[in-house]
Amino acid sequence: MPRWLILLTLVLYAGCFSPATNSLPEWALFGALRGRIFIPTDGRVKSFQAINGLTGGLTGGLEDAGFFGRGSIDLGDLDGDGIMDLAVSAWADDDGGIDRGAVWILFMNRDGTVRSQQIISELFGNFSGLLADGDYFGYSLARLGDLDGDGIPDLAVGAPKANDGGTFRGATWILFLNRSGTVKSYQKISSIAGGFGVGIVNNDQFGTNLNSPGDLDRDGVTDLIASVPFSDDGGADRGGFWVLFLNSNGTVKSKQKVSNISGGFSGTLQNTDYFGGDVATIGDLDGDGVQDLAVGAGGSDDGGTDRGAVWILFMNTNGTVKSAQKISSTSGGFTGTLSDSDQMGALGMIGPDDLNGDGIKDVVVGAVGSDDGGTDRGSAWVIFLNTNGTVKSLQKISNTQGQFAGILSNSALFGGGIGFLGDLDGDLVPDLVVGASNAAAGGTGRGTAFVLFLAPAP
Picture 1 (tube, rainbow, N blue to C red):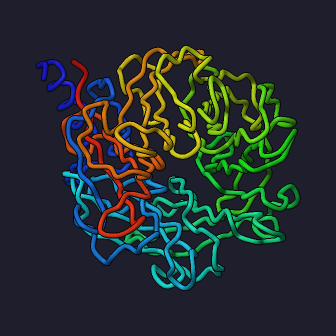
Picture 2 (cartoon, rainbow, N blue to C red):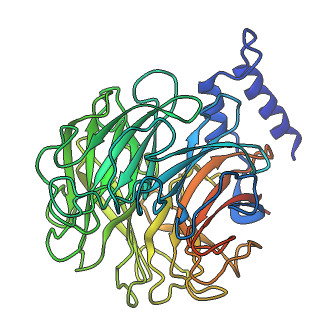
Picture 3 (cartoon, helix red, strand yellow):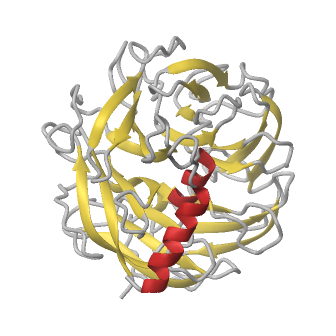
């Protein structure tokens, strides 16, 4: 490491050090974890740690066809030990009934193994919300920061198959957490709860994916994005998402839908594009002071059937779209190779930080149908962006690319959940967690979450 970078790192840490507590205060730790002193990476993998029922320190048992890893996100430093913790879903877990779902809170070690865990389901974690068979609680997850102001990170959990108000309308649960990973309290948002009001219809599957844009409307409260990729606005399953402006108690203050016919989005969508398949925040890409978004459309047929696409949306503070740039096989400067049914953007997306050190935040996008190494093993694309939303450069991570040596089975769906870990192992290079929810690890469909320690750029 260059001497100047070592010195800079020491200065930054010294400036944040709290003599009273002999530790980094939470705000300083968050800054360090989120990338303010990173060594640039080109997106290749240095090493990895698999977390599943066989390895990585996870105890308590995973179920067959529980699909652990679909949602794999950074939660923040929940227990205050200076290490980023994870929330990982098992959306088809059978606690309390068939496919009701669960969320695993994983307290991490720096080597990517699990120090301890807490499961949240209908039976565990002090969660008393009512779930029904087939709700898919945990299918999507989003970190909310400290929504209620108690100093502890909170969590949004999607249950897109919930039948609140109608068939498969979906629901989202706001979980206010304790430092132990148990639930202190909760608020449900659906067509009949949480102040949402009208707008969700049958089979919208509200909450299929979740993400937080931070405080978009600048009222001091974190906001939430909840997708409806099966929305029929403009045509069958064209998709969309809701920007939810929240109150600090987790209820909805106001909302704005973005789809083929609303919210100022002027991009062209086709039937079964499933726009909103996943959503990620990518910082203020264009420098106008407003958080921008990356939105997947895994059913897009640009260049071939279901190859997928990502829309970069430049946002307004009211949740509408100012302008848009599409990235696909045929647009946006994407030079990688996509094949039919790769479904880039369908599941798994994160806007981690400025990974390559050019001052522009980047995006990592899953392509769960990729056949690198075998059928539907999946992949993740690290996309380095320009400020106009086009692609500057790319790195694919799969069974055959990006120096990833993890073992994937056919239909593993690697890339189906992606989170950002900051610098977990302390080498100043950013790290990722990538889910493979259908990986065979001790049983059929038990799933795996891979912690990827990225390599510094050459």
